[in-house]
Image 1 (tube, helix red, strand yellow):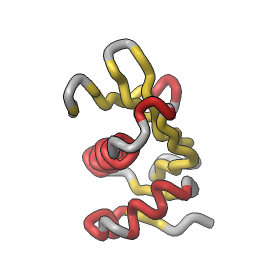
Image 2 (cartoon, rainbow, N blue to C red; image 1 turned 90 degrees about the horizontal axis):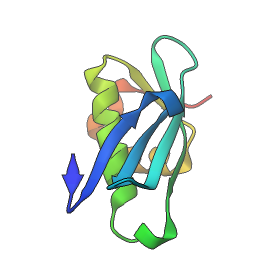
Image 3 (spheres, helix red, strand yellow; image 1 turned 45 degrees about the horizontal axis):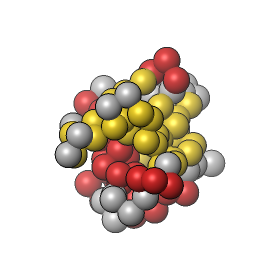
Length: 99
């Protein structure tokens, strides 16, 4: 997925989905794997110089679509992801509450 030179990639070795501007890491949403079924999103951030462009929402959308495609379920401990999910009920079927 791209936005005017911006790309979104899964970096499983870092347990995150990244926002890339060429070789520059512009932001990410970090996750942990508490079990074989869930992807637990714990933190999302975008570099200040990329703020206000909607990139956090795009990387979360990219990440959650990938989680769905892999047949996994979502837990959102990250406040940003949790709020994003309230506006996107299309992910309710694969979202479990954060304990």
